[in-house]
Amino acid sequence: MVLLTLAALLGTHLFGGVSAQTWCNKNYMANQSIVPPGGNFPIPTYSHSPLLALRCGPAIKPYLAEDVHSPAAILIDALVVNYEITGAAPISLPSRGLSQAGSIDVTVSLDGKTLARGDVPLNTTAFELPFSLEGLTPQMTPYNLTCSATYSGTSDAKSQSFSTTASLSYIPNPTNSSVTKMDLRTGALLAKPATGLGGEYAPVFPMGFYTTFDGYLSTNLSIVNELKEQGFTVIHPVPTFDNMTAFEEVLDRMQEVGMYLMYDMRFTYMNLTSVTEQVNSIKNRPNLLLWYTADEPDGTSDPLNATSNAYDLIYSLDGYHPVSLVLNCQVCR
Image 1 (tube, helix red, strand yellow):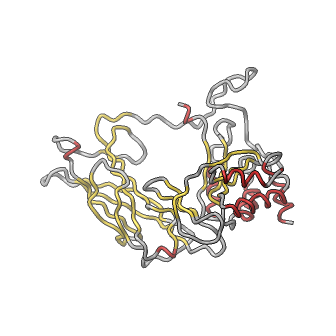
Image 2: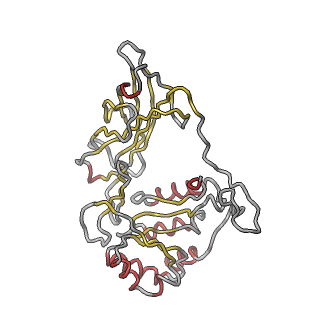
Image 3: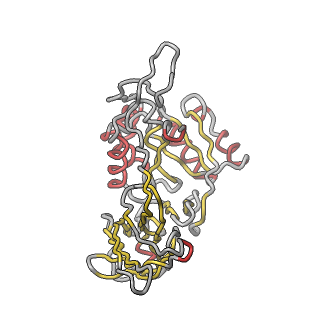
């Protein structure tokens, strides 16, 4: 019954809220006029005075309960910029120049208690401050961190203060699910082998095969074996998945040969009932690597909050696999 319901939801192309084929203010079809898509990222205002863009976040997302005795770290960005990006604040630097401007004293705290502290050189990124997970309780709701910094350019200069916030995901061990961790130091995805037979977390190089399911993958299971032999590590089936029996067989074969799944909800991600059905049906598969929601939503004028609505829902239902999408307009500029 679950498969029949899911098949019905997947078989419907839901484009609610789509107003036009806008495609980044360019001509998409010869007979269509240019339509501004809206939602453009603003170009930051230039600042003639230096600004400190203080950022912080966990080195790994998520940390698991089983990581309690493993090294953990908070990453600190202390970039000095000349653009008024979000959160950047004025900083008074000594006249001798940025290269000799020294460091900021950073404290990372949770509910008023210090988790980590250290000196972070100015104009660096991903500077690691180690901390311990001991004393924290694993929970599905992210912890809210406060990262505070002080800076004195010279011994007699007045101290300057800066602050930002971040989320720390420290969650219970899964009972019946795979986990994909994001290593935010390198951008790598870390996962156990896709076979589900055990093994250590290791970086996954997502050499993906991106193709339709209906009419191709659904027609011949040996295609999965051929893709594995050719060196692919991930299969990204494009919906719809009308034949759910064949879909389950393909996913089983992928797991058998050790290929990861990138699960695509491009046609249904704005239908939150459908998203709930799909996530609950797929989330426990050992070879699930990550979710894929919107495919170039800026090109089809999807509502600007549609992707974040799907993102928040998926993390509330799963939390063990990252959520991805592809944009069209901003990368074309």
